[in-house]
Length: 292
Image 1 (tube, rainbow, N blue to C red):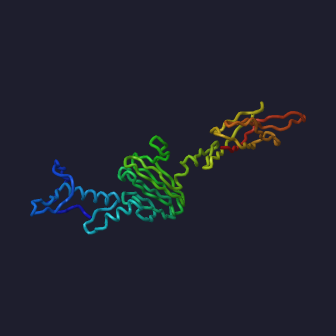
Image 2: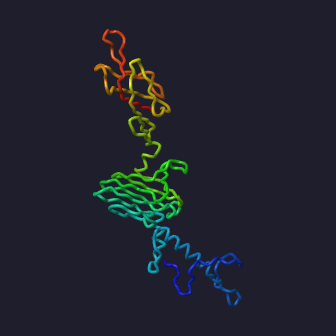
């Protein structure tokens, strides 16, 4: 369906005039009874035309005079997804990709999918991605838009998201300036149940509620040292283990005691050569803790 094209057509949408008369339904009239047929004004025809053309364009299609199936095609795309599209290499995502599953097939190099402005999609418009290649795909924002990886309007945002081989991602536009992840494995690292802080000292949360933490410390020749977890365990501390990294004494070993939800005490010690008490060392150690 294409908008009206004729020498008598207006180049711009005319304003709706002041309306009067009866609000109701069309009639063919009755000449015998003196009832006139309903006049079909231009404002009403323009309304029907724009409603239909808007559906077609929202699905990323160009209205065509030669295709009378575009409204149906658009509705299917908007409501049930627009099918599969395989690509190799970089891609500039457009409104034409809305409702589609875009698959990266490259086995040559990393690639980038650049999103359009979120305002180019209607509120709730979606696009999905899957990486079927052997290299990573970066899904990159456009301009100053944000990807709200933290969910709500005040949550964490990102400029891009990474799809490793096999990863999937579905993004929803807010119709303004943000994309919201609403599905896919690439979003899992940002989900509360899979949250993490990765480094020499860090933590990993699991969907079951289990919390794993790790880090390093240094003992003291004066005795035990205090170690604070990167985050306190909310409910239980199941276990803490420590092992030495370097040893001044070949027999020094790590000891853990006074465990709490917020941390523990540790020492690097061994039995002294006199056979009584212990000798403490300023050796470094790794620690590993599990709780929920």
